[in-house]
Image (tube, rainbow, N blue to C red; front, side, top):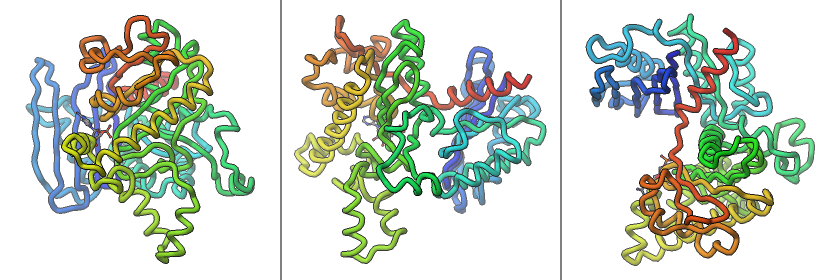
Length: 404
Ligand code: AMP
């Protein structure tokens, strides 16, 4: 079975074509600056011969339709394409950021599903419209191919009521869906399944904390295979300190800013989405730059680092307590996979709680199958590269397989 995975943002579109027989990537690509005259195309084909063919060029990508057409052109190019034509694709899997209350699992797209996704737009106005648009375009371009939606919120549908709700007037939940949903579910699910495999346990027999630390970041408590708490909330603004989002904040601060600076909702949103977090603290949002600046004595970079780690430890501690028994802590995503200093800081001084990091293994996790805890550490610590594309493809294949 060949699955095309599509993951789009407001001005970008990423795709992967996977052959599920052996879970092999056949091709992948990225279209950026959609809607601008200098759209950027990157495409890589993994040729059957083992050779890799790559192209990078600039071309206008007027809209997502143009971007998806461009992707199909690359996938089916006569000499360097991975497939001869779209008819060789068995299903398309779409990542959708917010599934609201309606979606708890990957779902085959039909008109009713599209209607229900449309209803989630108020909950994710920055993400879901682009997701929905691309599903519609893909349905037009590939009318014969089943389309499946995989939601970033779905893995967290198991949050128990006490973790699911805000202590706000109940009618806001009933009438407007104001509750905690959680995000990065595809990633938390993928690395948690992988961690269970490494522990030699079934997912239903593993208690885990997964730390997805990238430009966006969240931590998840997983009890016996199910998400029971996670740091993001109704939107991806809650929780950890992120690249440009500040995470947890006294809501009174927003009221104060609105009153003192006469800020509109849109202005407040812009600050929360784009001007806060690491960037707000030190002007940089790439952890590599921040590490370098902190090493050379930049006090604001040092504070940003310390706050990032402090917030991670806050959640790791809270979730370990909540789980009662913890089998493994997993680091993933850009920072979690690559930054040994952050991982060490997150685990510092926790040996008495059973988290015993091996400093040597932490520097070269790839030499130790990702295990960075010391031999005999009661709780294992792993670095597991996330693979959201593969997880979406697996879930898509399962849905399509079940309909025969
Ligand atoms: P992601 O959102 O998962 O793609 O992660 C992106 C973030 O990972 C970037 O903004 C960087 O801050 C961080 N990152 C990537 N590589 C490294 C590295 N080698 N060391 C530290 N941080 C890194």
